[in-house]
Amino acid sequence: MLVVLLFAGIFIWYKYYFVFGEGVKSGYLNYAVKKGYVFKTYEGKLIQEGFGRGKTGSITSYEFEFSVEDPEIFKQLEENSGKQFDLHYKEYNGAIPWRGNTRYIVDKVVNMK
Image (cartoon, rainbow, N blue to C red; front, side, top):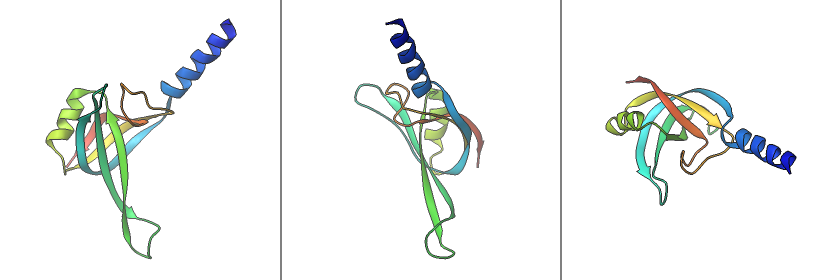
C-alpha cells in the first residue's frame, strides 16, 4: 500500500508540478480573459508571426495560448491588449484546473512594446 501511495505521489508531482521547460515567447497579445465555471483562471493568447511551411515566402502566424497565476501580471496584460510582449513562461506536463486551462504558465513580462 505504501509503495502504491509513493508511486501515485511521484506521478502526480511529475505530471502537474515538475517544470518540464521554460523560455520566452514573443508576439502580439490577442486577448487576456478571466474565465471558468468553477475555477476562475486567467487565460491569454499571443500571436507570433514568422515564416512557416505554407507557400514559399509566405508569412504565417502561430498562436501561443497560456495561463497566468499572478493577478498583477494579468492586469498588465489586460490593460495592454494588442501590444507586443516578450513573456517568460514555465511548461508543465499537465494542466491543473485551478492553475489554468493550459500547460503553459506565464510568470513574468520580460518586455512590452
